[in-house]
Amino acid sequence: MTQAFEIGVRAKARCDLMGAAPFSEADDMLVRRFLTPAHKAALDTLKFWMEEAGMAVRLDPAGNLVGRYEGQTPDAPALLIGSHIDSVRNGGRYDGALGVMLAVDLIETFHRQGRRLPFALEAIAFGDEEGSRFPASMACSRAVAGTVDPQVMEMTDAEGTSLAEAYAAFGLDPTRLVEAARKPGEIFAFLEAHIEQGPVLEAEGLALGVVTAIAAQKRILVRFKGQAGHAGTTPMGLRKDPGPAAAEAVLALEHICREGPLGGTDGLVGTVGRMTALPGAFNVIPGAVEFSMDIRAETSATRDAAVAAVTARIEAIAARRGLSVSVTLMQELAESPCDTGLADLLAAAVGDLNDLGAQPARRLPSGAGHDAMVIADLCPTAMLFIRCEGGISHNPAEAVTDADCALAAQAMVGFVERLATQDPRPSTSSG
Image (cartoon, rainbow, N blue to C red; front, side, top):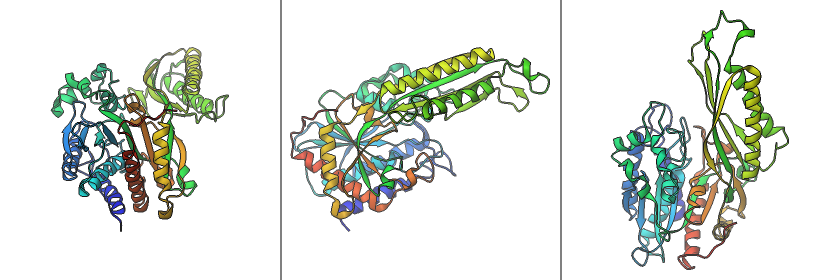
């Protein structure tokens, strides 16, 4: 068994270890939200593994854990490698976490060999990518990229705790969030390894893929407001019930994204992941219904056209039913092309593994959002996809194989070694 195979398997095993308490907030499922005791337990263990791998470790002002392995010269520009350590509720063990563990193991490979590169290597575990506790995702990577809005500190979770209060309870100073931003030139490139979260690689019998671009997305909060009333005494024709309006809106989203003029265009997809009826009693007509809409496409133009079409339908539904409605944009992320030069290097590293079963590098877009799309504002980025069983993610059934993780580790080592033959500030073009 080669060392690369060993580290790939170890990365997977570490994800498995973190799939339960104390690294989860629940005993019967994986839920690791930002700035919770489960998050702290994960960081404490990761800190030990990073230090064991030869890194100097710090928790940055945004709550990201960063481990640095110096290059041949002190304070050299760094290749940043990693992903996120938080999870959705009842999520899988490998989404995000596998990329973090592979980054740690990759750096330990060079440490064990006593090798220093023309650039530094930094492993990072972003604290909040999913937005599973607070309503906007990727605040931590946006802080590193220098694009975070300090007003995010006013966001509250389901318990009414503000992000600022959560930071303070965690031992971090919320007024220092912007200090997490890295200076120009400190980081010259970013590599993120991640499970595909889709079925393409498995359908084509491929272990690995090289990402070309990350889809544009918008997160929207819709709130229909009507009149609460008794469920038994208010005639159907006299109700101002926001429930059926919300149902109509969900079907309108499905139609626009699947069957309307935009259906099937640029990977357009729409999802309602959360819906709440208020006050939420069996025998009360709700006074308001609030729900989320997540709309994505490979281009911002297609995404925005879909958002406009859905918004027009929602407003028409409200007017017809005598309801008031608000449509609030919660988050907007533009499409993010990966750097073509880095993608070529990564594809070449994958191609080197043909004899080990990786097969030629498949290039494909990502419909899911990732920290890499935010870090692209700081430096060129590259992404490696790893096959996952059935394309299933955000689900306890999420699964990867030891062999595929080993190939991912080998490809990442090959990528770094190829990069080391170039100038530490590679001249690559985005596209």
